[in-house]
Length: 254
Image (cartoon, rainbow, N blue to C red; front, side):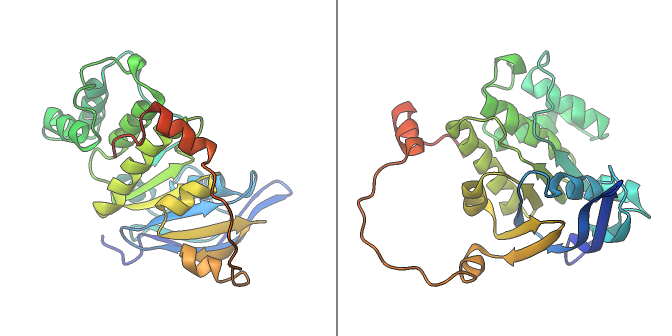
C-alpha cells in the first residue's frame, strides 16, 4: 500500500505507570523526507520510535506507517520498515559481505549475494567487504548496519541516534549514508541529540517537549519563530571539529 504520508501520528499517548511520556503527539512525515526528531533526554523520542516500529503499544491515538495501522496490522508495518538503534547490530565474527548475505537470506531475497554486493557498493564498503567486521572502524560498522537495514528496500527507516559514540570523521560517513537514503526515496525518521546533525541532514525538524510536538517545520521556518537576527561582524575562528578533520584528512566518503 502506498500512502501519501508514510508516517502519520494523531493524538498519540503513552504512560509508564504515573509517568506520562507522550501526551497527544501529532506528526506527519512525507515520502522521501528526512525528519529529525529533537528532544532532551526523557522527552519520549525512543518511546515514539518503539511505537512506530510495533515494539510498544500506545495507550491512545492513531498511528499509521506506510498506510497500515500499527496496532491492527503490525506484521504489514514490520514488512515496510527498518529500525537501526544507537549501537551497530553487526556480527563481528563475520565479514561485512557475510553479514549482508545473512540478512538477505533471512528476508528471503532471491539472490542474497547480488543484494550484498549492491549494498557494499552503495555504501563504499566493497574493499572492506571481505574483512571481518571486528577490523572495521566505528563509521564503517555504522554504515554496514544501515546497509543491512536496507535489505529488501524498506520504504520507511527509523534511525535512533545513529551517530552515538562516533568520532567526527565517522559521523560524516554516516551522514553521507543517511543522505543517500533520502535521495533514493526512502522516508527517514531520525532521532538525535546533535543539533548540527539535524541542521545538516533534515528536510524537516520536529521538537518533542513534555510529551508533545511543540514545533515542526523546515530549519528556515523554525528560525522565523525567533526575533530577526542582528548583523554583527566578528572574527571567524575554526572550530575544534574543523581543525580535527583538517588534520586527519578532511571529509570521509559520502
